[in-house]
Image (cartoon, rainbow, N blue to C red; front, side):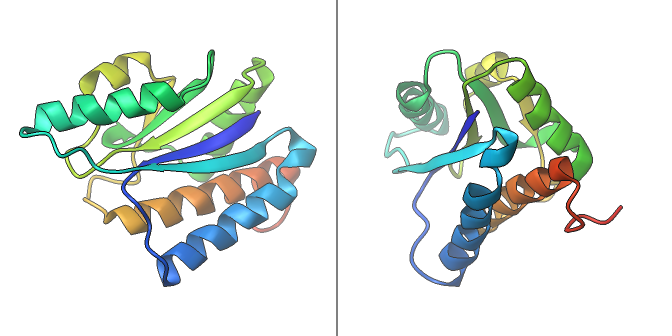
Length: 160
């Protein structure tokens, strides 16, 4: 299953970008053996529409254009479920084992994600009820993807 990280907003060069890149590189090197291939990160600019609702709709349309046919969709949203790391790993394995060819994990903009996306998502996940800066969410998503691969491989990176 090819994994794409979709993000509204750009991650500027610096330590946050380097750390996110480090985990995505680890994912790319180790995930293939498990059928979890890191494909790419897609960054789109934040919408400049006049209202939050219109901005979310514009950003959802950008995601729709980037979403491969039949792709699984996981949204990162503060109102989602809060699985533990093994639970997240099991979700990825289930989607892979169902024969899903592509997985897109979406990080919304400052206004959040359009409610229509929630209806079509395979899962909505939260990293907690607190609000996180976009840069940290990108790092946490990259690290959890790498951690999921190590859990599924039985590697001792994750300690229970």
